[in-house]
Image (cartoon, rainbow, N blue to C red; front, side, top):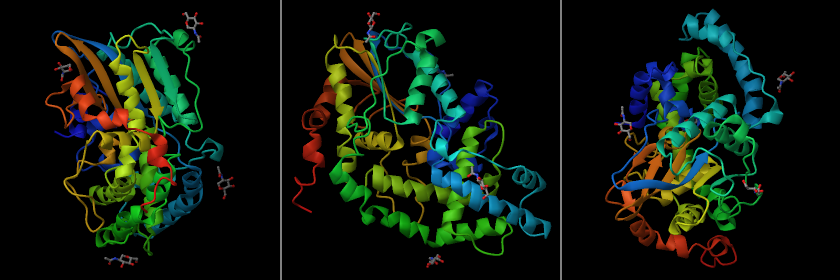
Length: 438
Ligand SMILES: *[C@@H]1O[C@H](CO)[C@@H](O)[C@H](O)[C@H]1NC(C)=O
Ligand SMILES: *[C@@H]1O[C@H](CO)[C@@H](O)[C@H](O)[C@H]1NC(C)=O
Ligand SMILES: *[C@@H]1O[C@H](CO)[C@@H](O)[C@H](O)[C@H]1NC(C)=O
Ligand SMILES: *[C@@H]1O[C@H](CO)[C@@H](O)[C@H](O)[C@H]1NC(C)=O
């Protein structure tokens, strides 16, 4: 059963008033990619996770910041391109063109959005809620590893030098502790250069060979001019009643704002979602998945190798029982999480994603693996027969591919990830002058 289906069932079981309770599989909001709100994905079952003869003793968790505001470029795009488009669509419908119904036209007519450019990428209110609720549920699941009372030795909170990660950490602590206690929480200082939380940002070799290498974007570009994409752009333009065919850039902007506005508002639909149907939303989702696959995923070896910088801190902490802290919460970004998931061999498609046609069976779908507040947790259990590690992705127990069961012996993981722990040298991996081969 896919994650969305599970989350729909939980929403129904727990009488969540969210729109997700009524999202059917054809709803475009199932295909919002990296702008999917966490409430669509999260696991609302927060029962304590118990295993016989075992006790949860430590936790290491990496969390993508919660729902945020758009970039400056997209904020300006809302206030120019989309504002103009709004009037054009309304005008064309007055002339009897287009396929939007009265309800959708009303939403569009009422649409206006004034976001201060100064607040680009700031954590949104929904992002605050996501963090509080996530913390509350994690706390209930692992009451021994995550103690009730804050203690500056046993807890560690770290975030990147960004407003959205910092605010995410802050609201997470409000969910863990009571309000007063959370005010006393000490956060580790944020570093502009952070090889643990944002290892790729200053990995010169990765920047050159992957991020700034046009080859990385070849498949996405190919898909951008594919027959599937052209059909999608034509269908969207026709649905909106326009005489001309929109550019991919404009369709992409509508898709992104549809995602953002769906995330921000639990109870209101974004008029920009009306431009899409299931098929066109799936095409836009795949267009973005291609980029993430080649830039943050399995496309290049160095991309996921460098994630050892983060992973080894988990092993360092788990190896020694006495070592504090016992609960580590790290607040970072999509780029961090995706590379770590790849390092752990998760969600790998059977064959590389290509730009000629959509791969509908791929497990690599940002909607499920890279939504806002995406998270990966490793929990150390002390068991009668030794130490074991439980892995949770999006709060659901997963079995790592290199393990035989979900509760995986720490020794086995240490062996498997030997190189990640002992041969993870940032300057070796990332220096350009050590690279003579290309
Ligand atoms: C909730 O989670 C607990 C612990 O993982 C599990 O035993 C229980 O079956 C789950 N409940 C539902 C309704 O799925
Ligand atoms: C939006 O555009 C209008 C007109 O172009 C301008 O007056 C206004 O300042 C802009 N608002 C923002 C938030 O950029
Ligand atoms: C940590 O907590 C202890 C006792 O609760 C306190 O004495 C100490 O000053 C705290 N350390 C920091 C860095 O605030
Ligand atoms: C799609 O449209 C673009 C731009 O109009 C064009 O260059 C490209 O050849 C088209 N692709 C196909 C497969 O028709």
